[in-house]
Image (cartoon, rainbow, N blue to C red):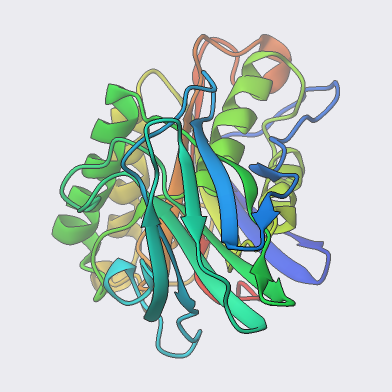
Amino acid sequence: MRRIGRSVLSGMIFACFLAACGGGNGTVTPATGTLSGAQTSASGISGTLTELRSGAPIAGAVVTVGAQPSGASCNGWTECGTPAVPLASATTARNGTFTLPPLLDGEYFVTIAVDPNPVVMQTHAILHRTVSVVDGMLVLGAVHLARLSSDETAWVRDLNDRRSAVSFPATGAVVIDEYAEEQARQWSADVDAGKTAYTDAGYGPYQQAYADDPGAIGNAAGALDGNTTWGRAEAAWFAEKSNCPGGNWTTCTYADNTGHYINLSQNDDVWAGVGAGATAAPAASGIGGFRPYDVMVILYGQTERS
């Protein structure tokens, strides 16, 4: 059974679409934010970049600060994958440290990326966030990026292949975002552990946790499924095209058998996170015997999902 639902959280409307729903109990434990503390100096802004799980320093990543793309014109990775007007950049050293010069006070957009062209090959998530500069200093502190598994790299490639071959969004590929990846991973792990329900309400706190991360941009939507592989889940979501008149997601009505396809095909899907269960979920989850899979897509600049 498929169902669709919405919940209002902190003034933002989030939508997630499930392939099944059921019980589940326990404590929800969305991932925590990726930045903590602050390191600044009179000579500029400094920080340390490490891998999310291992804590190992990441060398050779590019940190870029600049103007934030406007919500009106920002569609797809090509328009809002990096700051619209880069003002400063730095490359992390062998120990993961980086230094940026002081900036004028104001709001900025920061990206931290390991891969020079993530649309072709992505090995690490990319951090995207807004920041506020006060007294010429930019507070970043300790920063983490998730190293993608071979399955996750293949999954995002498959998602983009299906978008280009099945739903034809005008703005092309999405890439894996740090905040969305942490929440997508955490939800699937918590379903496996029986800590959250496989329902819209059970997914809502992870969407809210994305929004609560420092500088998170846009509205989190998603597609969820209980299946045996992520490939089967992905195929089922895009197969919903047949339920839309003419297969057109832009004019299709949201329903329990179209919502996954519509959500994964939006022009303003800019980045995403993918989560895969490590084992079969417990019976109380509502998908007993199947693994939980989810894609959390971020609709850049949207505060409402209708």
